[in-house]
Image 1 (cartoon, rainbow, N blue to C red):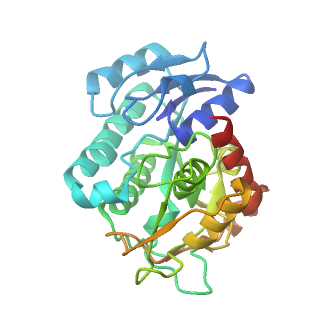
Image 2 (cartoon, rainbow, N blue to C red):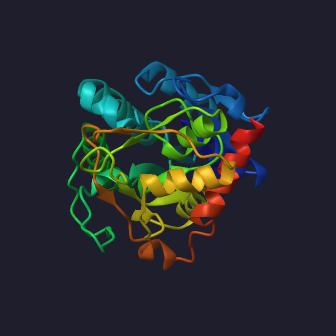
Length: 310
């Protein structure tokens, strides 16, 4: 197996690359380094600084590396950016994604594993429920719409060209190497700011001062294990989550406990495009032997420890 990981210098992608490399799998990274970091990629791994929108660059990567499998982690991944600039989101996530699919078709790739979004694709998840893969997509943001659309393209390429595929619908992934400076990745953002003694902003679920939105938080190592399973055996759509919801305030309290400091909190109104509640059912994936192994507070302790050393 020869695996090309798009976005392999980023947060989730770099963990996938490192894990495959340690198993002795031949792996290459494609990343434009817009948000990824070259130092996240271990020395000795093939690295291509290429944008998915660059057809000639993609052609060179596939011609030289000849992947049998593709892990597609690269994306414009900000809900806020997608709301502000939906055309950019379309160009990267759909046009760039189609360039990748065409390269897969031309060079005979056996399987593509896609980093989709469970945290945004289902729309609002009612209290007491967790979204299942059979629920119809109800994207609220252009970002979620692009992910849902690409899943349909995967299905079409599978039916017309024989490409095997898996779409892993991630919950809110957190852990070491997550960017603490963006608008997404609340665990990393809180960890860095609390460690530095800086105030934190708590965006509301409905009105400023409430406990914030509810999300399903999944530790990055659990996502990597799901990805290994997808490369080797699964087909179709799978949620990667815990089935448990936590408010933004609960995240902040867990981070503050791990750091040992109580931060100043600034209440803010809801952000455009944000869902009030998103929780995923992991039962379909669990039927294949996977389960989330790192609990919420343990995962936050590990993440804080990483940022404390960093």
